[in-house]
Amino acid sequence: MRVALHTRVRADRVDAYEQAHRDVPAELTRAIRAAGCTSWTIWRSGTDLFHLLDCEDYTRLLAALETLPVNVEWQARMAGLLDVAHDYSGDGADAVLPVVWQL
Image 1 (cartoon, helix red, strand yellow):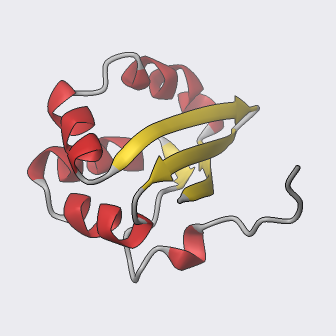
Image 2 (cartoon, rainbow, N blue to C red):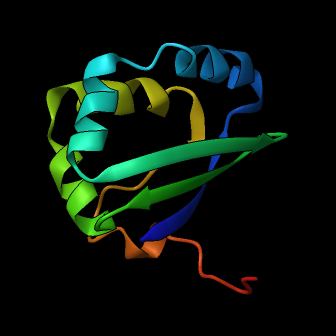
Image 3 (cartoon, rainbow, N blue to C red):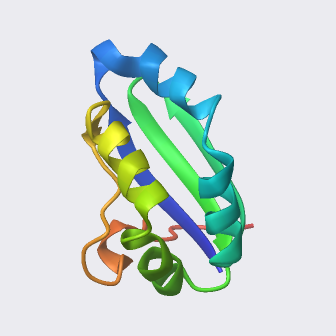
């Protein structure tokens, strides 16, 4: 399934956010892949961040990562950089951007 998300980086933390993503822990990327994600791309426009994920099951992906120590540490790091963070509450459906049009 393809999932689009929107988050927002703090204006004064853009450089730190981009630096963090140049060095995502290998343990975290392995865990994301093991949870069924085949790709995850983030685009930035100003402070707006747009994520596009391809995964087997987004709800299962979130459940697999939610309490994983490397992800908990990563999310804590991101919390200091983001105005709007990725939401792990519920099944994640509320965070997913609805499809408006597709070619």
